[in-house]
Structures are given as structure tokens and as C-alpha cells.
Length: 129
Image 1: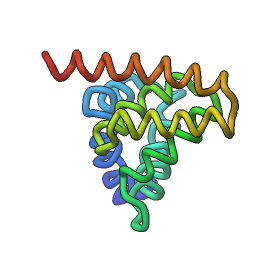
Image 2: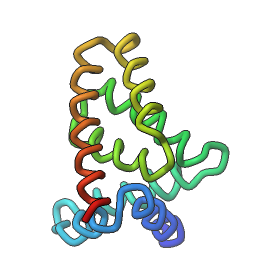
Image 3: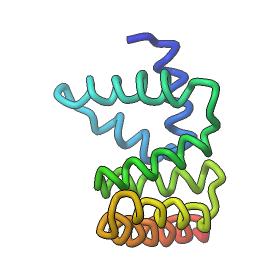
């Protein structure tokens, strides 16, 4: 593991997904899942999200579309919240999910809209606490 890329990835992952989520993911890792957490942090967040060329906001836009298309509800909800943290508006998220509906199918868009609304409600509840 490249500790420089891991540390960079940990910083970006925490910025996008929130400290509570990242800490919980790392603290709950066991001997079986720890290598996955390390790999995700170093390679996904350190090597890819840490690259120049796209902003975090642009990366969030791409992620929302891909994760919706792949029908990964847990990850979509998490990344909707991350997209809000990265500066996307709810209107921009809506437009991304509408485009998903055209290119990936209406069922993917329907599920994605439902999950986005849940993520918005959670973000609102967190903000008002």
C-alpha cells in the first residue's frame, strides 16, 4: 500500500462521503474486509478521485450516472450525499437522473429518484440537527 496515496485518498473520501461514514467503514473492517477498505481508499480515492483534470463536482456527476446505471442503491444514496457536499444542486442531480432514464432505462431512473429523495431527506435532517 502506498501510504501517500492512501492518506490522500482518505482525505478526499472523508471530504466527499463524510467523516462519520468513512470512520465507521474503516473501524468496522475486519481481517476479511480490511484489504478492500485499504484498496478502495488508496486506489479509488487516492489514485482516481485525487487526479487532476476533473473537479470533485464533475466526478460526482459521472459517479451518479454510472452507479444509477449499475443499479447499486447503497452506493447511489451515499454518492448523492457526496454530490451535495461537492456542490451539486438538487436540480443538477435531477437532470443527471433524468438522463439516466433515457440512456439506461426508466426503472433505473425511478429507483434513482427514490433513493435521491431519501438522501436529500437525510441531508436535511443532518443539517437541521
